[in-house]
Image 1: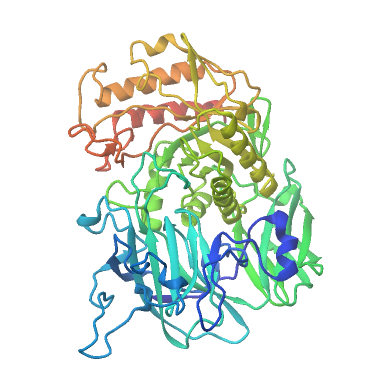
Image 2 (image 1 turned 180 degrees about the vertical axis):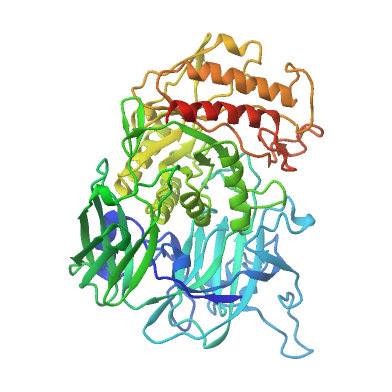
Length: 636
């Protein structure tokens, strides 16, 4: 554990509800929060929380990563009593593993012990750290102890980058709240709950899959359980900058537009935005609701606009009387014009690749900057300027690295395959995960597309569900594009996109697997694509499995030669589509999947990677790079 002092920075939740936050100094939260009260523990209820802290690493914080003791609890004996009632909702609020009890003397029996339990490295999933837990789905309790010295006039937040999937959080034996969703950040305010000295945080994490969750039961990736991203105790002033957006106005390279939102007792005050390197300084005054609009003219001659070729980031300072924060922000525009895609007003071809939040070389989720930089550098080695971060929100660190390294990003939520479309609570879950993603990354230049889902089958209930998600994301951020990975339909030799959702998004974006799931390398060339939308065409997936090191003729499935020829054939088919403006083949590296049991070719790996699980580049990697080299010259 260590304390890290950095620049102050915060953002928030739904911008459309910023005024409501200010009314009662609280915001609609994605977490279930237990009020801080003495005596009988109240049932866990949905209450309002301040907006999730933006750019958490910029706040004064104590990093709680490291070795956490853990207890595997498949029957949830540490959560329910023998009547299957939660201990934390009982008359005393005690009785669960979160009490962290020790026997008072030799006569007392306690049937668990964190002190004698093994440890997990956090952040990190349990599946890859203990062979017995490789396929485990259920509850694991994790405990960390830390020292704190809370100060008067400060607010404190216990922040989690991600816990898969459902988390219940306890501080010093009392529940502070719960959260559902395996890939988005959440926090609980713990002001007044911290002890001056040693504190104990205990997390009940449960990665059990359910039909009515997001994602649902059926996926094509490993269900890694646990605390998979950083845990921090963050400190803010009593009145702080709760939310902001500082971005170029939509389609206007000569103006910054956005807002600033203050939260706390002193909401009404002057706030100054400065970008010294660009000669920008402007002061706005927040009203009684703590909110002020921002509109700042720019001298274009003084600006370097962010792009993959020049990923310029400016230091932006937002200063109020009670709070001050810095951010590193790139300024660029992204828009469509008919079938053209324009970055900073210039046509661009998205030379992309899809990737999972998984290290193929060391089992488990990407653990930190080194893992993430490796993945993005592999993409750049293939001459990519763009990645699709599938099929769920990747970490905040990954997005910031993309900003730094000059890689455009498609960011996605796990509305994947067949969801329970007609249930309001399922939509609320999906909408909240989308909100949390946009909230976290709305000031990151690399993110150009918000994706609302992947391969969702057309039906009336699904169309309504997904259409509402498209509307929601536009209320959150109108400066970026909205996409989804649609499915295709085949009529004879013609491949078409026939999906009402295409009318709600900005791109004709779809997955297709000619040559693998339908047809083969010889027959696939008889097909042609017909896309009847006056929008840029982005191919979000195509590919073929190849076992790294398996060589044969190009008719032999699973060989590197088959995969390589399929890519060459795909380029011929796709280049014939009018309006083709990018692609993200599936996938950068081989990754683990329970859906892939073939004992020789797969062994529970999806082998569509262009890089094997040993880090070796397959033949198609070099074919892909050659194609992208050509596209780079075409779109200079």
